[in-house]
Length: 153
Image (cartoon, rainbow, N blue to C red; front, side, top):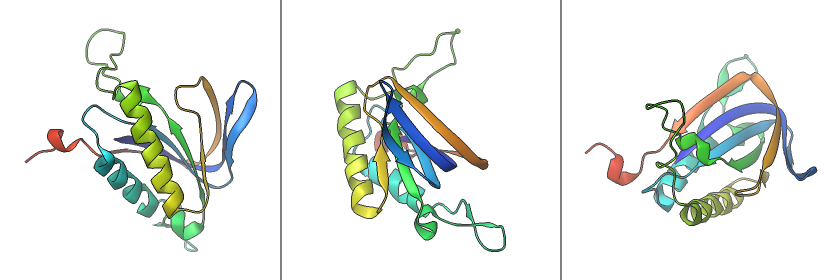
């Protein structure tokens, strides 16, 4: 699983001109399931992003998690995070999970997030979304939990 975390002061996602998800301070997380991913990778990615200390404390140091600060999560599916740009000028997306599997893992990720965090909003899987954000910092952090089959022994 791949997650691209952006610390935001606010973010929203629109579909067909209507806002379907909105948060104040927190994390906008672009999420991509890769071929070979299972619920285990989704759960590990969620655990990591909930505990990652990228919010500032009273001393101005990045020492608090989204849970510590009570921030929101806006989870947006984005298969293009699996882009392979090594050959030519047109990215290949063969590393992304098949659409049905990607949807299943995204839905699992969202359900787990909602069971562990009080403020979770989402985009719409496979929709043409417009994502609006105010990146706070800016702080943008890529996370990748490789499929178990691809992990080093």
